[in-house]
Amino acid sequence: MIRREPENRVDRNAVAVFIGVRQIGYLRSGKASFYSRALRALGGSLEVTGEIEEYSYFVNLPRKLALRNFIQGKREHG
Image 1 (cartoon, rainbow, N blue to C red):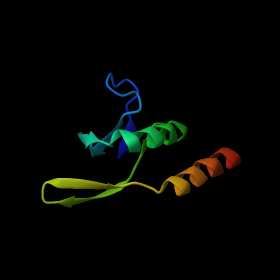
Image 2: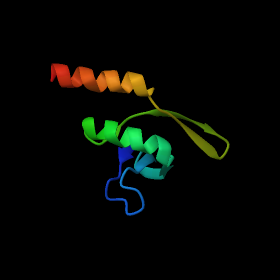
Image 3: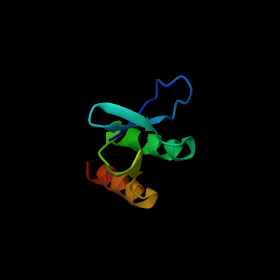
Image 4: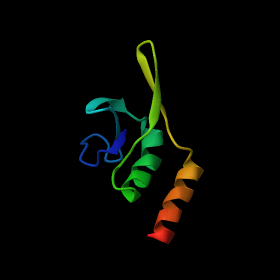
């Protein structure tokens, strides 16, 4: 799951990454800026998939255009 963290003192656009209830990190600030705004429109969080490779976890984020279109569709159809 990715979740907005607007109360973060370092970056108000911070987006935290979770596996279950355990926070494992953050999106890089360049990506977090876009995804933070998108998550605000979606209620603050989004379930995503990921992959574990040895000691690293890779998050599969939705493509920006697809996410924009999804949010626009939700706005248009309530």
